[in-house]
Length: 374
Image (tube, rainbow, N blue to C red):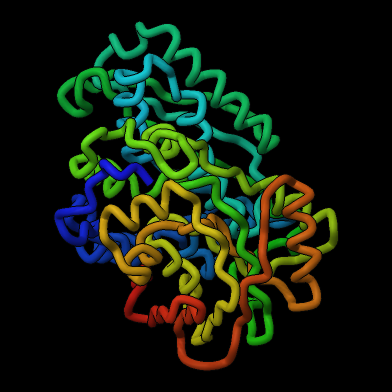
């Protein structure tokens, strides 16, 4: 660790960085309740919603021979780090930023058992001049196309508005929507099969992914060398923050081909490891193996002076995706993930009991009241 990097200033929380889920989550719940009544409109077309998908990471509609799943997600503030690092290094990071944006949508869509089919782009700039930087714009296009190829999806189109007065000048707000198929229907994974005795397999993250960037950016104020502060591995803080988010759809597709049916999946994004509590069932999730923490996340925890509970409630801490499978399929799930180039661990088990997550190696407990998304 760079000895010049300051660890002063006390604990820096996600709320202090400008993100307070206690204020945001009630709106999400209110929106879900209002939206639930609109599902009846599907009947006019002969379709029905999968009610269990309400509150999950993607919405599912039964269209007869198969299900359709859909999701829209925004990148968040990671593009601001790319802009700052371009100023400092002259390098464009927008190819990886493109992958981050698609990953935010695709990694949510696959939690319900869907195969990603079509991606749409939303690139809202603070003015037309954003698109005049040919190197940056081309990197965004090339990175977007490459991520689509990794996921085997069609890039259908998108929207590129210039929103002066809404988006800041020379900034861009990136988002992606994704539509997928659940075919055959048996692939549907909304937790109805989740039960005590299931194994919890965690898939490795590549770093911070695209969640927790408000905290990561706020932390720069404490670092004398800012984004250029060196980590233990010799890379700069800013460069490490910009590692592209892992795309997990190759793993879920490979699991299907291997005959492994997940009972549930969770994309570990906002709320950190609390996302393991997403399913509404009263079950206990006991973790006995914790993946290694990427250097950039360990750096953030140390310099934000967060204890383990605070860090694991905000950041992915090395685990970007969780797959709940029958215990007999746990090791094969790990093997399939590794064959896709993504490290994985049989990290724990589901047990009968109160709704809680017990991370035993770190003596952390999250209860039902630590995640309210429904």
